[in-house]
Image 1 (cartoon, helix red, strand yellow):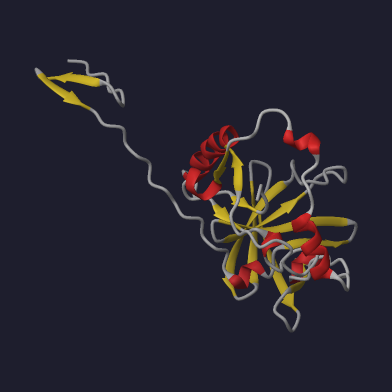
Image 2 (image 1 turned 180 degrees about the horizontal axis):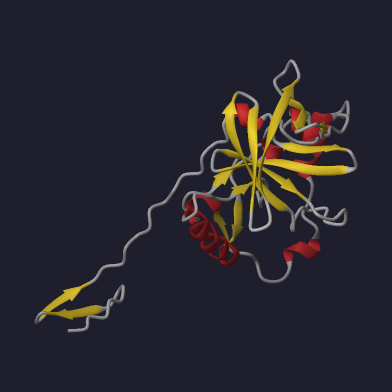
Length: 233
């Protein structure tokens, strides 16, 4: 007897009526990158070459771009790094035409950040950007900061914004399960180095929230999720 299994349909099996309930996929929480690995992540350069060290499922991976025009490393070769001991790894290069192992060694600065990467007999330097060392770009704070905040809160809404269909805004955290907030302008981790708004909630148009919720649900199956940096207030 052939039994066709369809989620959400009614099955006839051995004369019994059985209702199959949808199976809810397990939601995987994103894992934080281990700190000893996190401080090694970034771009390295030398000998006319560039590559990126990234973390994937708790392991390091080297991305080597094949052309200089591939600025996003979208078509780069991916090489897993097998950990041997602290800051010592083996680069595994396997394929139909090649199967080799190369030693990889990182050096750190006094703060623990990776500054060089040695691959075989070649040495590569770390290319640091502002946020890499938790030093983001900063705009000098004006002396009358509090006065500017007060003036902004008392400013009138432009007349052009008061016409037309009003958006139906919803609280993002209530509308989308599992989404996280990291509202930069409500804290100090922004280009101003201080909070410029007091509202710590994020709002979004209801239709857009539904669409974003579908993305969040798809990502959850892989252990990922969305983080909102800014939204309507």
